[in-house]
Image (cartoon, rainbow, N blue to C red):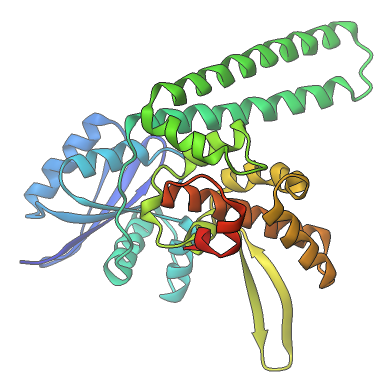
Length: 327
C-alpha cells in the first residue's frame, strides 16, 4: 500500500493541494471553508488516498480549521515553519513560485523530511491563544494611538478622537485581561499550570498566560533546548576555517509571541530570580553585552517554565541549580 503525502499551500480564501504517491502526482484547489474541506475529503477518496500525511505551513491562522478537519478525519498532519519550506525549495533548486508549485514543494518536503506530527490543542487552549494574541494586538494599538496623541498635533477635533480611541482601548484591554484570567481559572488544567508558572520569580500573570497559550503541551518537547528553539531563543554560529568567524546571533525562527512576552520579565528578573541573577552576573563578568545577557535570561526563564510544568513541581532555586529544570 502506497504512502500518500499531501502538501497544502493555504491562503485566506483558497488552498492548493498536491498529492504525492500512487501512480502519479495529483493537484487541485479548494475554497478555504467547510465546504472546501468536504470537497477535499471526497477528492482524496477518488484518488485512492484514504489515509495521508498532510503538511501545511504555519501561516497566520488560515491553516487552523483545515488542520483540525484533517486530524478529525484520521489523517496524519504536520504544521511546519514556512522558513523550512523556503530552505527546502532552495535545496532542490526550485525556480518557480506559484501556489500550485508551493503545494508540491511542501508535499516533497513532507515525503523526504517526515516532519513531526501535529497534535491539536484542546478548545480551551485554542480560545486562550486567540484571546492572548488579541490582547497583544490591542496593546500595540494603544501604543500607536498614544504615540500619535503625543506627536505634536494641534487639532482639537483629532485629539478628541484619539482620546476616545485610547479610552476604548483601555477598557477593552482591562476587560480582556479579566476574561483571560477567568478563562484560565475556569479550566482545572490551565489553572494548575498557571499556579506552577507563578512560582517562578519574574513570571507574572501576563507572561504565564502567554506561555500557556503558546505552549499548550510541554510533553511534546523532549528538552528545554527544544522549547528554546521553538521560541527562537537559540543562538546560531557562522564559523568556517579562518576567514568566517562571526559572533553568534539569535535565530529568530520561532514563536515571536513567546519572545515578546519574555523580554520585559528578563529585564527585571535579576532583581527577583536568583537563577537569572547568577546567570546575568556570570555573563557580564565574561564581557558579554547587556543585550546578550537579556536574551540568555529570556531563554533561562523559558526553560524554567518548561521545567516546572514538565516535572509538575513548583520552582525551587536549589533544584534548578542542579539542572533538573533543563531535563
